Image 1: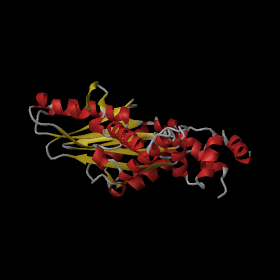
Image 2 (image 1 turned 135 degrees about the horizontal axis):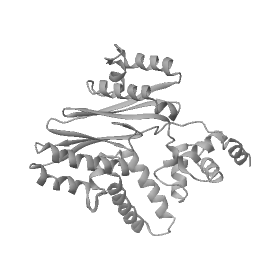
Image 3 (image 1 turned 135 degrees about the vertical axis):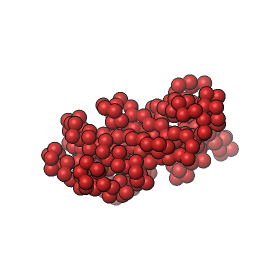
Image 4 (image 1 turned 120 degrees about the vertical axis):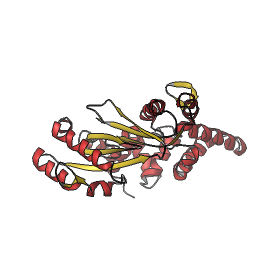
Length: 307
């Protein structure tokens, strides 16, 4: 398969590895992007988090809560200048406010009516484009609810009330004191903002993600030249650590690294006066997964491919 400059650039963006390493990885894996990422990781050239691949788009994350429910939405714009515009911020707030009365799915929110305009979210955004003069879109949303308890919200580096570049909602189930639940809920939400866990528990981690990690660990262990029996133990140990690092309740709590998040939540029962359980969370970071065009490296990448 022919390896293109665009493929090399994409792999570089996703892994932070050098261009020649990216070109070699793609050559070794017949151009398969995911396999190339794993090849680079097995060689110790790329990290697992692929932070550099999560290129930020502009816009805002908005959160809203009502009763025992909360929502988080993402609304994108072309420039940060527009994201700081009062009209755009009002748009993001309106969409979040409307989302709370739906099931939280993007389709339901898009079709919901915005009271201030009398139109659907989709049509309201179209009108805003005409008014503000820049392309924008409602991208995604999520909602969490509990029968008893609260859904805590947190916006990191908020630019206005309920608006920022990163938003988290956390469902806290309990019949206990609401103030105590709000306190532990906010702390857990701040933890999630900082650590970006993949799942609530180790059992909730996507099996495909876990399998990929295991395969990378196996390849790394094999390079040590140790016997298969030792390799198996090494891999199992690394997988245990992997689950501890990516599952929320088993992570070391950023507020007190001597205890896990799960232990901190259980301990909150003393202040709440009833057992406390975190049942779910959603973390939205602005622009994650959106690739933006960058011309800076075009000539450099093309030269690397030709070389």
